[in-house]
Length: 255
Image (cartoon, rainbow, N blue to C red; front, side, top):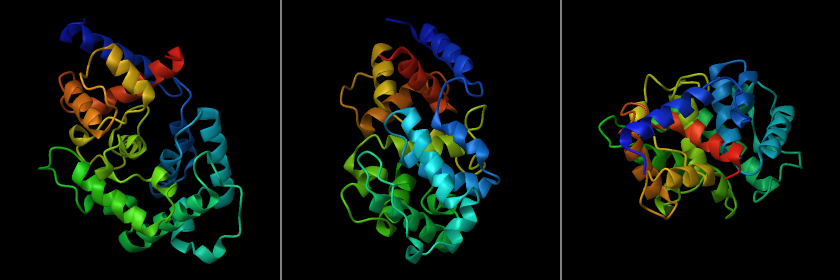
């Protein structure tokens, strides 16, 4: 078993290796196409919701979204009406065409009511909370309320209280809050990086098990919390900095 010192050295080495633009194929690089921060925030949320499956498949779907909505995502959402929905072809793996337009309608409603996704998140964000779970719970519930009614829509925006890792919601927050060569830090002034949770997917789960960072075996929200708390030993202010490296270490090694 690696000592804590050796584990930190390894994690920091991996962070430096992957904290380089386009160090590994990832949907996050699509965000460079957006002209403004307001557009980027919306595009990031849509892309994160659909960030499951192969990266090539995710990127192909992302291009389809841009072809439909354009890159001026903020103005698109401000003027969107469900009556505009004349398109098909947005089914993606587990999610239907209706799910996609439910998501668009949900984001549009939030933009019109709150002004931005960040403003909605900040409604329940409290720096005194242990982590972002209370804010994330409200964030997902409001978006779900405005979105689709199908069971598959819940795959795009899960209920936090159901206990899944909420990987893609936490991925979106990583992109928005952290700031380095990968993440954008648009919400960094309002949300503390130490409050974020690791976006645990199968790759992060396997690598964290190999490194014996977490004793828990069930891959759920409690696992994400436990892993984040462990990583605070190596960077108390920014534990989620290790996510991109651990994820792509798993992808690159196909392990």
